[in-house]
Image (cartoon, rainbow, N blue to C red):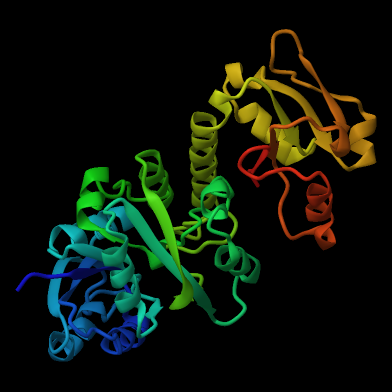
Length: 368
């Protein structure tokens, strides 16, 4: 029997969530789709260890029931240091055989029609180079509300234009569904144990190779937010530990990836550029550019009278101590990179931006 869809589920010390997750899998509408569940255990603490985690025991308790609906594949190891989210996903893919891959985090819940809807989109689109996501709900309700509103309300065009924001991929990773052939062609996820944003680098790799984005405009996943999550999309994503140092390193890595991609795809192709935000984020963005692209910056713009009154920003690190004008945003000349957070200050920024009649993805790009 050939497998149509492989559910890809890496696990690590996931015992407290697995019963609910497996219950959601058992409620899937399958019809005539052949599905397997490929679980890879990334070093969960064995039941006899001091940390004691029941992940493997729970999988075994569910085995007979799961096998009534799916071909079940379980691989991995116990009582070892985690090798990373990317490693776990790649191994689960390696041991699976389905034509399509449906990524499922061990702590999230599938809606009953998730696989059915995404599978039929993949079949009907007839394009292997397509990454399919969906809308989602957070559990507990209201968690990361601003992020959820952003992700669920992006237009089809904004799925492509807002890819440089700190939120991460415009299709959230826990909803991804794609063809195996495309995943293999891209080389899978980066395998770095800690301090890496494997979903973001895969997402950019997908786009740079001509891949398409498709969001099913239905809620197909209940996306759990909790402090122990290996992936949670607040601020700048993917905190695998709660160490302040690790979080800082990770944020720096993600910032570097975003800077690299916006230079490669946008700024390298421009002759001149304005940065909207003469404050901390705008200056950080400027300092992060390579020397060639720094010289493309003709001015900063802002709405804050104090910043505008200074008249210019001095690049103290440049040999000539270059002075870059700071002007009112109404005088800004496109193209513009906007380093202002959305949804703050009673939407004053959004009102100002709208008044300029600029086109996103042509006249400006968001980087906040």
